[in-house]
Image 1 (cartoon, rainbow, N blue to C red):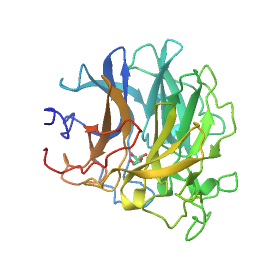
Image 2: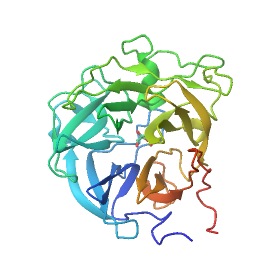
Image 3: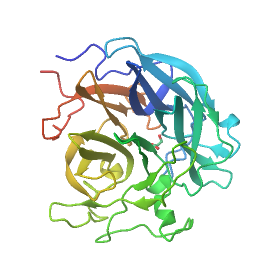
Amino acid sequence: MRRKNERKPLVTNIYTADPSAHVFNGKIYIYPSHDVERDVPDDDDGDQYMMEDYHVLSMDSLDSECVDNGLALSQDDVPWVSKQMWAPDAIYKNGKYYLIFPAKDKEGIFRLGVAESDSPTGPFKPQKDFIKGSYSIDPAVFLDEDGRTYCYYGGLWGGQLEMWQTGSFNRDEARPSGDDPALGPMFAEFSEDMTEFITKPRHLEILDENGEPLKASDEDRRYFEGPWMHKLNGKYYLSYSTGTTHYLCYAESDKPDGPFTYKGRVMEPVLGWTTHHSIVNIDREWYLFYHDCELSGGVTHERCVKYTKLDVDSEGNIRTIHPYEEAE
Ligand code: FUB
């Protein structure tokens, strides 16, 4: 039996994607990208994803109506941003809510920014500049049980991660290919006040069953974008999108910074090119928040967020979701 909202668009008044879901004070908050209708041809740089602001969604419970709480932050209010406010995440810390978001700076380079609010739904007040040393997209912020806060981020192709392989930005940098080790997601620790990174950002390793780094050609398993971190029984679960092959996969480690070992698939492909998710524990059960393009009939940059129950066994193994199968 599925819940009445399960696997259905949670809101239909706007297009939404890349849902980062959290429970704050017993209520569910979703921090998505706010997709916009634009007549821009699809390309590998993601120029069709021209999002300009963020709206926060909320639900009193998994069975309640999902509410769009209106404008939370606009690109017009962020001094360093030129365009493309992509997938954000949020965290509650120090009595404040922080929105962590990627966008292109005035040079067209993706950076990560921080904005804060006293309310989970905003409005959020941005810092004047992007996080020093940050680049690429898709920040996922993880508050560990010891109070340390980590940022997992990065995306290939339009997310520009390959362009930083030498340590500085080079638009023409070659992409790893064939037997080259795949580029893992980036990892850095936030300062206590969430304004900066206190460790030098570095790539995380994802290893295969033999302890070898996944190869760039292993497109069914290698990292592409959309990282998420959840923890169960002391183990760290890194989940992510494989991009070109459209899977959500996961890998496991005893430490927040890996190395991670590839474990399996979280979800088979959805309608649309992108797949991007979050995993959250609600009332002692695990749920996957994700998106597809059902609401627009398949337009890749007009997506809608959904959720579904995730079956996780006591050892942390995730049963692969087939997003369009009939309920049992
Ligand atoms: O929403 C824009 C981009 O599409 C995100 O940053 C990626 O994860 C993909 O979902």
